Amino acid sequence: MHHIISIREVSREEIDDILDRASAIDSGNFDSEALKGKILANLFFEPSTRTQMSFASAMMRLGGSVISLGSVEASSVAKGETLADTIRVVSGYADAIVLRHPLEGAARFASESATIPVINAGDGAGQHPSQTLLDLFTIRQSMSLEKINIGFLGDLRYGRTAHSLAAALSRYDARIHTITPKGLELPPGLTEDLIEYGTDIVVHEHLEDVVEDLDVLYVTRIQRERFPDPADYASIASSYRVTPDVIRGVSDRFLLMHPLPRVDEIDPRVDALPCARYFEQSRNGVPVRMAMLQKVFL
Image (cartoon, rainbow, N blue to C red; front, side):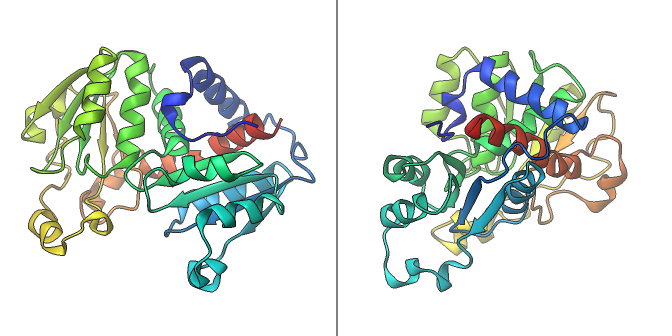
């Protein structure tokens, strides 16, 4: 049984293998009936558009079927069923589970209750390994992953996509630049892990101080749903915004990425610039998740 819970548990060789598989799939080289007869259960305990739909699309493109939890309010969870019992029940209905949950650690807990593979599709402020793999895939379409200069702009305290991507890129000797509102810096534990892994981390107060040196700028929104106190969110909302002027002067190979959804942190005028890759990122979710499903099932 092959769970995918944290990118930290996926070796560099396994990452490269999944990205190579995704490249082949993206070129049309795949068996459209490879997962015929298999059933994937999508269990999403918090809202998702891209992750849920792209996993469903990936499964169906490989000939498999998808069942879903539906709305949490209409499920047995609303009656008080525990996550462990839900996972045990669904293990009897499907061949693998994709789980998104608002609580950090929920995916690992679920994997301990499941009798089928579990893929973490985002757990609170923890990890989001499938997003990381499609982020890496998107970068690798334009440049080598080795020793890139990447800037993380936004909510790095609660931003699980940034946590996972930083951990993955530490294996490729990336230099990480952080630009965050006060109070939303990388969690100390993650920073210590990255430093222990030999990653060079540079902290900046303003994006303008570093943007021209970056190969990639990874922007995240400030996540209102993660703030216990709405007043804390209101105090820093809209504290940064990427406009065409802000990224004027970047290198020719510069990429602007965002896991989406965005709110107002990227000016829509940026969408037309060749560096804007966030919609391509979203599209890449299908071939990358097809590669992940192949690895889990086959």
